[in-house]
Length: 345
Image (cartoon, rainbow, N blue to C red; front, side, top):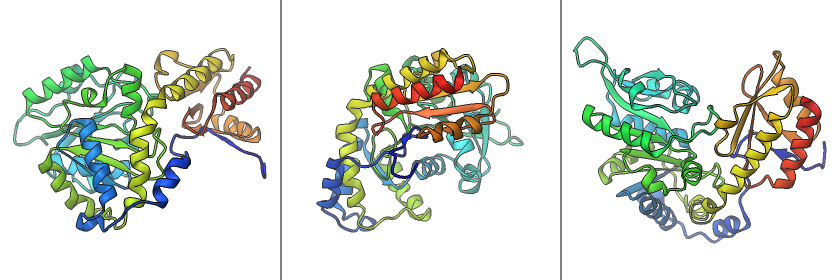
């Protein structure tokens, strides 16, 4: 494999900065962000707040940090956080709901990762002193481990209304919320308008090398700076990173439909293969998850794809994940499709 370009479909986190990002990073105006003096970080935070229709925003190194800051903002120790049973905050954030916020995740299974108010309200704890109280509802849109599925606006509006009536805050893990907005044909401001806080990633489909943003009220974001510092996220001349984030935010959102089309192409290819099984209705954005029939061995398939110059992920003994992004072209997907047909037919 030495010297051969790999087609990397493991995640949309593997993208390399665009030429415009490199140029912006090289010329970024910087200051000390812990003192609030980095002008490029300040511009990024202001622009993110404007796009989402919020009072304020904070730049954080990772999506996990953004989510965990939000959970800490909304909860008290000893409360429960309602989340989807395969959500990122539950499975991939190192038990920080408990370790940092002192809360218990209350997992609720959703249909293709989508949590409805009907499902959520059954999990809300009764208001009695000898039962841990519900402190927060956390949703994920798009839903990573459900295959990039999208929660539509009518479902969200029911959740927002129900949560308000129940007196509960709602946070969105919107790591790929721009993908969701693209799929639904709405703005991220409209799609997230009823959430108390929203985290989104610059370093996934938007292609920045590092960083996520948490948006919310001015009061919430002022408090978020305390928790960012507590988690070791106080960065200094972070404008070098924020400069790429500004390019991601302003330029990269418009091209996400290309990734969705490429994912659909790969999914339809898999659907024609006798050794694989896929829920095509769940392929709504840039993630493709499929199962291998007859207890097929996902790690073996991943290894065979790698031999052909294609990187993918085994997400269980018989499930494989492919994720399309800026660095994977339709020609690359054609190569991958050919390999999948050869290995799965």
